[in-house]
Image 1 (cartoon, rainbow, N blue to C red):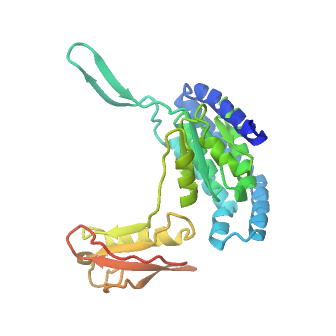
Image 2 (image 1 turned 180 degrees about the vertical axis):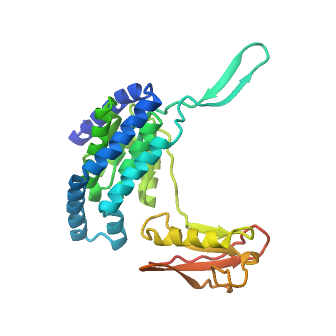
Image 3 (image 1 turned 90 degrees about the vertical axis):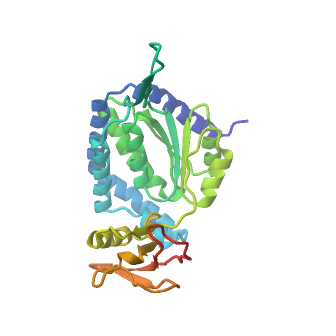
Amino acid sequence: MTSNYEQRILEIGAQARNAARALARATTGKKNAALLTAADQIERSSERILTANEADMKSATASGLSSAMLDRLRLDSARISAIAKSIRQVAALPDPVGSVIREWDRGDGLEFAKVRVPIGVIGIIYESRPNVTSDAASLCLKTGNAVVLRGGSESLGSNLAIAEALREGCTETGITPNAIQIIDLTDRGAVRAMAEMDQHIDLIIPRGGKELIETVAKLARMPVIKHYDGICHIYVDRAADLSMAQSIVINAKCQRPSVCNAVETLLQLREALRAGEEIADDEQRPPPAHQVQRPGQTAELPVATCHKGNIPVSLDFRKHTC
């Protein structure tokens, strides 16, 4: 027997499937117009989005969400502007649909071509950060794919408000808003329902913690694109411009320390160290903490060096807390 939430998710999937057929035939100009209008709509809807986010923040704080997770959840006017900017950047990208990857023939007059086409419907499951809603939706729209989004329950209001602005941008430019679907249910069973909905979803992408990724990979009846455990490194080689490397390191840590792709370890080739230009302390293990700073911020970074040619040697790394 199908539950109410499972039926709701099936309906969302069917709407996305129908939208995908039309979106796959949309021209580059029409998709770009939808993206640019959606970016404008995000900015026009900033008050509505921030109000929804404020409610999410209050609920998440009351439930004891960690400070790092709260920072990922938090939106402000600057982050709204960054969301709109990101959508415009996607619009400016080349359209991959229809591009020829490879052409060949068999010598008997039979010709072949490998051409990029939309996948169809992509399901994306993620946690906390509301900007993932716009990132995922805009990339899927650009590539001619409908998307079914399922964000974390702690950011439901923010995600719904952002998705509604994106859908309004589609409507204004003649793209069906059903190309961007968001599951408005917090039931944990929604993840299973999405993973098993292979009649409507062609590819699923879990983006979050280890438990979420393992669950989706185990349940999915369609292909899965996943990441896994890892530590974010920056490796500085002997040929590196150390001034540039320093700027990259500071940006990679201080720009937003709480996110999952903030740098955690700096690995610098011993031969790259030059007097007066070091960006890391040249010490033996255990790796010392090295401070990177920009106005108003200081972050501690574990540092290690290696010296066997251009290949980093195996070292024991430790994670930082910030």
